[in-house]
Amino acid sequence: MSFYPRHNIPDSVTLYAGCTSNDPAQQSEAYEQLYAYLYRVALRVVRAQPDPEALAQDCAQKAVIRVYKKIETCNGPESFKGWSRTIAFNEGIDVLRKRERLYDLTDEEGNVRPEAEEKAQTVLPEQVVQASSRDEMLRTLLLQAPISDRSKRVVIGRIVDDHDDTYLAAVESDLVGSLVKTSHIQVTRSKNLKKLSEYRPILDFLEE
Image 1 (cartoon, rainbow, N blue to C red):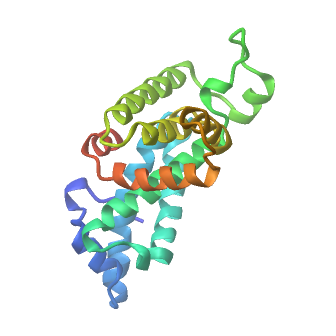
Image 2: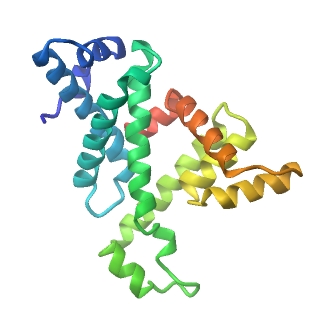
């Protein structure tokens, strides 16, 4: 698939029309444009990894396939790019979850764990610093986002701090004094990721 300059990516309505077109050639071109757009989104998520371009390509391909299979669940043409962007963003986050988180690679004395080093292959010091810096930038943006405090804890806890849903549910249960199920955490995160996919500061952060 070819990469289109940013200014050549169609608006949401036009892109949706192309992806749902009955004309095979028009549909193919629209999905190539969508791939180029989602590649950039995924690249911003995985850019600190040793092989960001390859990872971003893989994430974009998976995202395009998911879009194609689930396009009927999109709320409409106007929200198509935001909806697709969320899918690519989540694909990138899944990659980071599957890999050893950079701040979990060292023991309490700051030494790289042999098993973590083997899994992560070679992680350059500047990449660790870059990832840490971007995590803090993302944390700051999420703290300023127009969502509830609970939503911020849930999103930051999973995406930035990499806590699992069981841990997050326990934290929220302690805070509210009643049982919060992991399914509640998942629903909260899903709803707010959709909101955040349309939040301009987050979009600018991903597209830097």
